[in-house]
Image 1: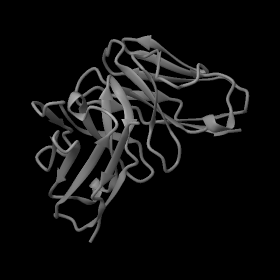
Image 2 (image 1 turned 135 degrees about the vertical axis):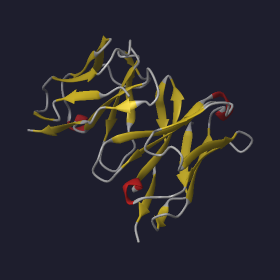
Image 3 (image 1 turned 120 degrees about the vertical axis):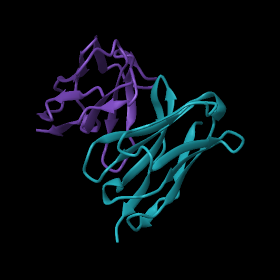
Length: 116
Length: 107
């Protein structure tokens, strides 16, 4: 069955960096575009970034552009989100999601807390 | 960016009721509209894509309609497990955007 498992979350100081991973299994990872979506505590969903199935195209939300970078390693069936210059407003649960027209499968989420 | 506006922001209903949530896009998105259900502490779950196509395994009590800028999600015969937060999302163009959410509460 399809599984997406995020890891790498934690507490980080403002200005520091963190890398999230999303391990995929149960499907042909290299055939799907993949996304990151985040949700600040008590708030709604915010799309963060997308990477095409072969890594050829990437798009990032303006709120993270220049600070976050989405990437993937199809040989390891893993999606990444490299986050730098973290701010308090980046505190959120970060979900990875598979793109099958819509987001048909989501991971359980990884909590990132930016605090001094 | 395309803005997605849901209404109402919250809704109280009883078991057995039928409810409708609306979603309006700030510009035309054809039928590239999805609906998600989220329960506290859980990841969102896909319900509908293409404005009206039910995701596999989702019961037929959920239905979606609309095209262009105006969309609706209807849930019939509410059961306790249906009380959750619902989000619409456009995937017509990047950046993909979500509505602010509709909290469906038990009356």
